[in-house]
Amino acid sequence: MRKGCYSEFRQYLSLLSFVMLSQTAILAIRAAVLLACSRPLTRYVRPEDLAHDLKASPTYTAKVLSALVRAGICESRRGARGGLRLARPPADITMRELVEAAQGVLVGDFCEEVPKQRLARTCAFHQACHELHEAMVNVLERWTLAQLAERPAPVRSARLSRQCLIDIAIPRKAKKGVTS
Image (cartoon, rainbow, N blue to C red; front, side, top):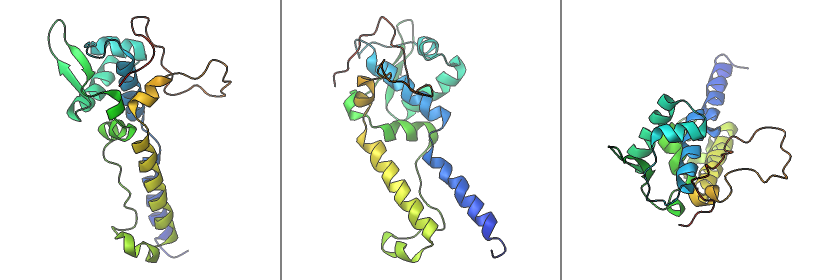
């Protein structure tokens, strides 16, 4: 292996971490699903209540909710009847928007920025990562918040070996089912 090649490859591998969702992105998705399940959708929900229902730190939840407000996914209102609510119908919010609001724009530049027509002349790893990036973006664009909120927890009969990361217990105040 030529000198420096392994260190370059390690850098490329660290870039692959974009494929995995950060804890911040997962919390953003969970909070948005909870807001999508709250009834009526026009009701403002206090950040403290969201943090409690999500079993998350109020400070960390506030940070994530601020990112959703900055991205235009949620809107906030101050005061005694204040809180957060979705700024748009759940069907108009993609999973990509939620992820990018929480962890930044999904970039797929690996070796160097290469125009699509020259991609065949790059290294094989760059080509594979480009395909991986495109597939991930397509999936995140295809799924909407409304679809996620239709089934916010695994079906009871599912025997999962690991806990679902998005599993949300909908508070009794909120009714199940989402309309866009």
